[in-house]
Length: 289
Image (cartoon, rainbow, N blue to C red; front, top):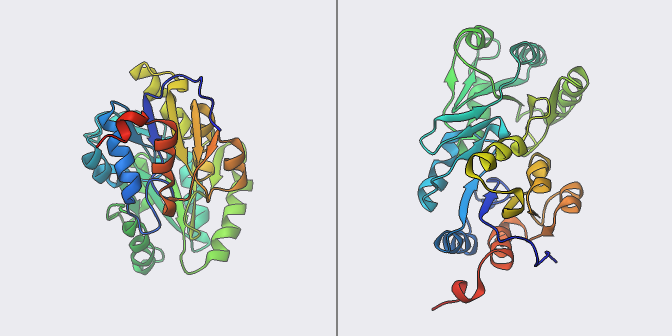
């Protein structure tokens, strides 16, 4: 059970996929009601996602979010107009080396450059782009910016914040390539899987949602102890540990559940809504007629 002596929660930060959103990529009614009530009671609410800023726009509009949102797995902190408050991109040499290795293995590299997805055809064909991007766009990611030469585009026009490596037709190949990159970049970059089985990603070393959250809290004058952070996977673990109340979803892996202060229901059981009702809302106000 949570420690009832802790400071009042002033800020709720929620992951999107697997947390705020259910498996149909929607916000469940009980979760929606709880977030709306928390906002009415004066609690600040925002999101921290591995996705780009455009994927957060619907949630910003729905809940009237007026504070920064964390995107690109913590490598970017955006204001609600999309402008970048703080960022920490991947070093260019690491980005280019990883892209070259991926293309050699027939794995599609997709670069997250701020609010955009940058991609180039494999072997001159757009088939891989179309197959894999249809999956990402179903998760509210924007259509990609397609370039002829990804290396040249990063050298001249775009800043890589993270890169995903994807092949929905060869899950074993993706898993094997993840091991290759993890070994290649050990100590230089972080390689992780945080969602779909058809992809994994590379991030700047030791940069996560926790880093962006720390910047946001410092700017807003909010203590970590006054924050509740909710997530479902290893990429959420840093902010779950950092927050005064760290909440793991019911379907989270053991390492996330073990380090959380509270384990709620799954994302298909309105776990976010349950946690907000249980840990944050003032009962007399939440149950008013």
